[in-house]
Length: 216
Image (cartoon, rainbow, N blue to C red):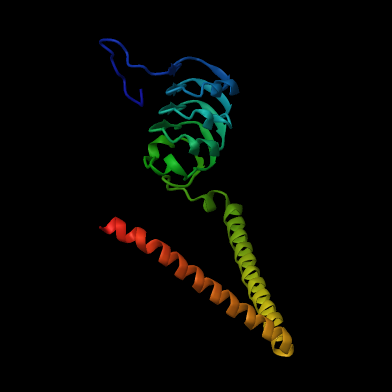
């Protein structure tokens, strides 16, 4: 359990556990296995499993321990694993996994490189392998994405500024050119000011007796 051999001398604590390690199991991990959403521990290490880690493995919401080491699993680490917030032990070493290690949620706490070793195509923290060096195109794509974000941000700011200036001069220009509109506008503003002042004073007068009562 969680990488430790535990001998239970009395009754075993309540754990929903599947341990099929050290067998000769082959083939892919069944997708339907992830229907066991309340499973607490899963150990499939030291087998001959192939294929990808099930993409919906994040359905294991209560999983605390996951050991898939020493198999022949391939493909990326599914992003859905970041939603397994109860996961406190994980071992994915010695497979053929590839791509960048997720960094969200629990993955930020898995700082031991040994849980990923034996996967030469994996990159990112906590491994020393940089993804841009392992996959040269990824760095260029990242820079292009960053450039596109900056361009979109500049266009957003420019459109806001143009919209503000246009709206400002449409309002102020019409007031400057049309005296009757200018009088209506200022009359409206003064009227709103008077109504607001009356509203505040009336509510203060109403609240004063209640405040005095509570203070006494």
